[in-house]
Image (cartoon, rainbow, N blue to C red; front, side):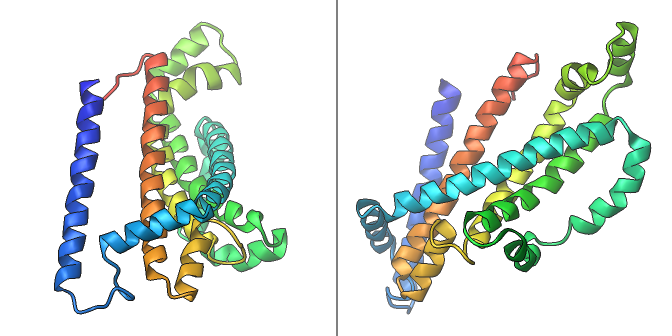
Amino acid sequence: MKKTLRGVRNVVVSFALLIILWQAVFSVSHFSEALFPSPTTAFKALLETIQDGTLVGNIAASLKRFAIGYASAVVVAVILGLILGVLPRVFQFVNPIVQLLRPISPMAWAPFIVLWVGIGDAPATVVVFIAAFFPVLLSTVSAVVNIDPIYFKVARNFGVKQPYALWKIIFPAAFPQIANGIHLALGTAWVFLAAGEMNGVQSGLGYMVVDARNNLRTDVLLAAIITIGALGLALDGALKFVDKRILNTWGGVEN
């Protein structure tokens, strides 16, 4: 309980310092509020978008796309990573392809994605999938490769066969390192969600940013940006909470 309260206090103090710095920069800048809104103006715009339902609708659209793309990427990448981790000779041939595709920005695939899956929710969801897939895949393979050999010996001694050993022994042992990749993928996927929504969709936080820019509503633009950051922070906190519960269930140590 004390740790939770301390975390809340740190967040409140951090946000307060950010607002103070923002107001200070606004006070000494030579830009008009049309170009650089003050915290008060941005907050009013935030309330405006909440009252008219714009913000809630865009948040719902973004979270839906993110949930589908991110969850699909994690499931596929973890399963594939576990398999490749116990088959290192196969991964030797797969790894060069992964390393070739991994550095390519998901947005570079956007024209092909639109041609293949059409417009609407699908392109942004696929962009999220691509952004999350490679960090989770590589962290899973690395986690399995670095497992203490004693786990495999125990599995053999007790006659535990695949795929039962993969799910009941290897995955729990590798999970702490896999969780690091899942956390990394969360931030990357959330960043590219907003980017993916800036093209070809009519809803979502990324669309809200573009729409505010086109209408010269920099106050709404900042409100959307703040919302994107706040939701990213909330999602990261929720994921950490889930990770800790899983580690506790499997006998892990909570940090």
